[in-house]
Length: 391
Image: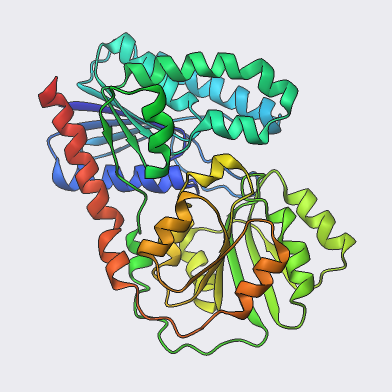
């Protein structure tokens, strides 16, 4: 059997999609050594100030990785469009004359999923889609209204073609299900969420009874984009907690300049902005943290998601504090202890929840057992292979 995996991000790049696909490939290597897996991805490009050397073509046993160079001098939306176009052309050139039993595509911005559908048509192989976000929802909330008016009809056609072409659609959050079922009623849906990678599992039990810093250290690691909305809450929150807390924000993103400007305007001196780091270095920041922070902007699109950050935070016996709304609040209430949730972008509510934080956190054994990434990816790999038998 031969499987083609399409993932815009892959190791050593830093993103939820990269970590998820890497874990899936490790599962194929472990459980299906006779299955040939080709991965088409890109050279590291998630953050402009983070790079790691890797080969454009790399083989490891039954796995071959092809990485496209999608670098461009343009940034923002135009840069993303050009990068995807380069990835699209690279993929189509690469698949000419090849045969695969299954196409698997993982996508948060719809276009990699669309590419999977196009490849599926060319190769005449069944498509297994892994959907990590509802891109049309995000466009409606985040993009300027004039742009939304122009692109939504086009994106709707692409989404319809893509979802209808898929034999199975996996969604990482059950909060997505009402959206898809209302539009695509007769699809075969599966639910394999994000999970906890081995590098974080090693931290379990490590921090029981750790000493609290004074002032307390609050750590966030990830993107500084409009979706996270850090620029709308952290400067005001840090100013309010001056002398009581220090924020360490690790990452980069489209709203970094706005975040820095607001910090300067408010004369905030208890926020450190640090460049992206690899996961081994990240563990050191988490080890030193007293509170782990997460935030999603106050948009309807983000009321359906489960931030992947929660899964790695859960391994630490430390309180999680965040601005979240929608489905994830119910998910946390059912699954995750010692988490203090405030309304996104709500300063007073955030301060109130901060004052309620109890630093005595027990090991989240039930959650960790249920959401170990390797177990989830083993099940996903089994489901992908099963698709070949169905067809």
